[in-house]
Amino acid sequence: KEHVINITAYGEIISEKVVRIKYRDKGKIIRIGKNINNGEYLKKGDLLFEVDSFNIKNDLKEQYSSKKIISLNIKKIISQIDTTHLKQQELIIQRDIIKKQLNKKLANKNKVFSENSIDDLRLSLSLKEEKLINNIELINLLSIEQETYKAEMEKLNNTIARLNNDVKESKVISPFSGHISQLNMEVGKEISPNETLAKLSDTNNLEVKFSIGGIDYYKLTQFPNNGIGKILTIKWLIGNKYYQAKAIINRIDGSINREIAGINLYASIITPLSKIPLGAFVEIGLKRQVLSDSILIPLSSVFNNEFIFLVKKGRLKKQKIRIISEEFDGIIIEDDQLSGKNIVVTRLSDMRDNMRVNILAK
Image (tube, rainbow, N blue to C red; front, top):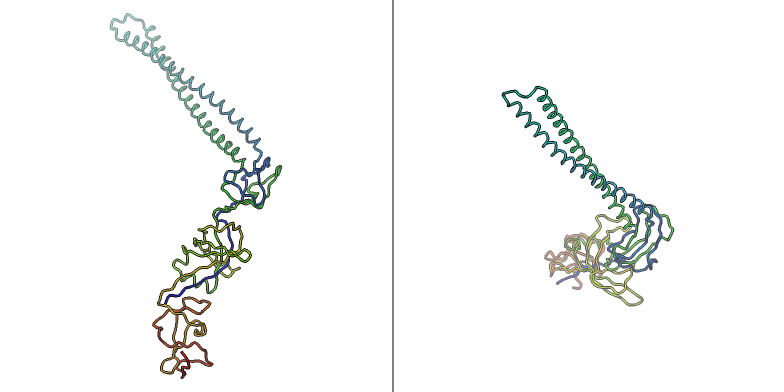
């Protein structure tokens, strides 16, 4: 025969997602969104409040001005580098002409040229080489200056991006649809970093939080995976009418809660429960069928949760048992080949092993 393990518990409806609305910096609230009242339903993207961004926008203007100046300086340096490259090419041409003249005179074996003219050519060549070296050094210095300005430009761009983001975040919007509560905001209010200004609860995705302890917790351990993934029934009583829904257990706390002497479980509601509010008190029903290798016996048959008495040939015989579940109509134990045997259901005074008894009724 199949038997059912029943767990009945009580819990409350909570939101799967709850956030505390805060602002990451200090500031002054200059605007509140429409319909921002305790209990109001907000849509994702609705304005909650806006913080004064005057100083941020001024900083942005200064940064854009600095960016413009740096951009002009980079253009100036690029122009200087281009001009210096042109001068370098001209110097190379002039140097090569002088070098060619000098080599021609030195190669003339008749020595019709004076030593002074040769020295003049050598001096001119040396001066051109010196100018070329200076020209190359200037190009290198200008290139370094250009890279420095580029680094400053990148730093400015990062600052501008951050300030633009600050301006955007000065308008705080609802991150998801839900009901707002615990309002702590008004126009003109000076707020502190991470001060809680409201609480937003997702009412489209609800779950039930409930606790189990004692014998019910033991029953829970008999479920596969301690009940994770198990579907349960939720009952919500309004007046004299019950509303029902289904939920699936998705997680269990990792430790025992000493205040409730039990452990908290959470189940996501998977079927609609009409207009149920957050915080509603509900009844939880969890069941598991036990296969035919178990039997249900009266509570009076079990001693110390450890053994029962059988009647064999007119004598009591103690038999150890393993309890699967304690139910309102008895205790489910492992069969252990007990079917068909005489189990004592009426307690006697001073019952003991091998005690002689008579069976009056079966």
